Length: 296
Image (cartoon, rainbow, N blue to C red; front, side, top):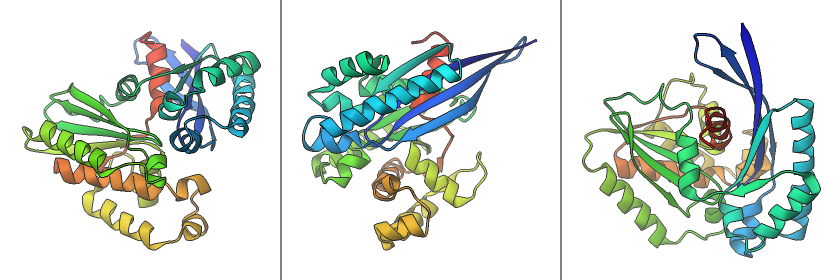
């Protein structure tokens, strides 16, 4: 006997907003299966407002309301039994965020919760990492977003420590990440990985997923430091227009992918990691799993 339940997750990031609708397939005596039914990504760059001006602009508020109305209709059509909507870095910092949340609840009937970096990292890390994480090895999990980057260290199958830094792709694009932040990240990574002989990176976020897709590798295979470094140089050699025309990147991906690659490269360098695994996970996947298992 198979039972299918539908859950939805809304991730309101600094570079884009996503709606993930997932089918959870329940079968007696087996672990539940999480299958993506639909994923809609809307490129509303809230970080551009929040990090430079400190508030979400009227134009982007209108776009958010329209997107949320559409998300609500899609969830209705898919007969979703439960959803959760989480907003991250950009909304954390916009001083009009509370008004925006209230307006969306009123106009689109979607309730949004603004979460801190620690909760964000915990939700992402609670996804399907167990099949990747070998109990006798050490991993640095790096999730690069538009406004912040979350680092989580795993060793012997357990989470050791986690930290969120205000170094995201949209901030880097606007030259808003000062050297002192890079120094803090370097110090944190080196201090926390010093006791481990070998560290492997696990990367999540839209940009590393794109890099991985461009590599043509099979899902379970890692990318090497040498490959990521050469891709960084290659992307830097192209203009923004060439990245769109020749590589087929979205316009809101073509400018931030270089900054994301730099973060992953630095994390590899400072932790001594030679490889990075790229599982297909993110905040949306984490929200669905946490909802299903009653953690949120």
